Image 1 (cartoon, rainbow, N blue to C red):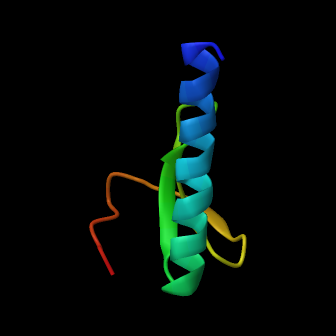
Image 2: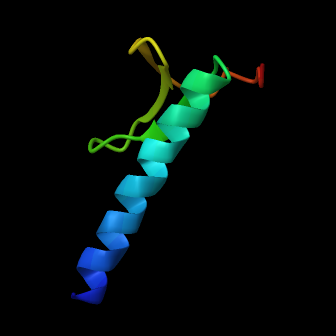
Amino acid sequence: MDSIQDLQKLIKLTGDRAKLDAKANDTYIVYKNAQGQMIKEYNNGHMIPVTGHDSSHA
């Protein structure tokens, strides 16, 4: 396989694992979407944009 394809597969698997861990721990994941905006996604599918004023880690 091409190394780019291998890297893309690993990135996808890492994101999938993060979602599973978030569900198991009743928490959320944070990622940057295609538009460059930081998103906080909860295990129930609820997504909210992260602003500079979000300082809570809980």
